[in-house]
Image (tube, rainbow, N blue to C red; front, side):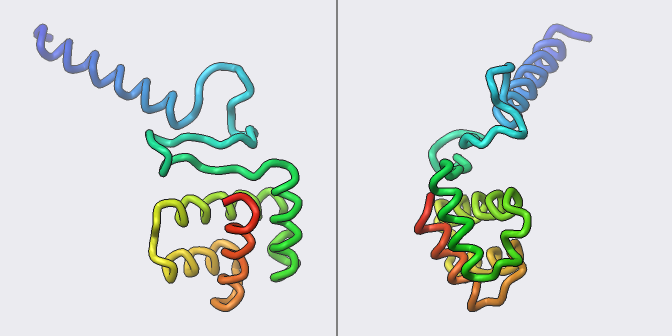
Amino acid sequence: MGKRAAIAVSALVAVAGVATAVVYGGGGDGDGPDSVESVTVGGGEQHVIPSPDAGQRELLLSDLAAVDPVITADEDEAVENARWLCVDLRQDRPEDGVRDAAAQRFRVTWEQSAQVLDAVRGTFC
């Protein structure tokens, strides 16, 4: 392998390592798949996946249960779905597209999807 090829391979390995660390977190400091803290994917504010604190979580679950109690049967799934809707909202996606996503994620009607978005916006997003 030539010197240029070795440098190119080294650069690719370094980039892959940084990308892996950014996506999956690094170190044993409490970060991981079970962490409830916000996670940054890539860079910049629009790539932060927000997470409600304990009080916001309870209010969110209460608001979602008011829409349809079935969607909060799995509380962790409901919160995770809400977090991803918040990402859509922060990325200024069209309202109809975000409502479609809410209807699909929470398995609710189009009308209920507006209430789901109100719950997400009104609690932590």
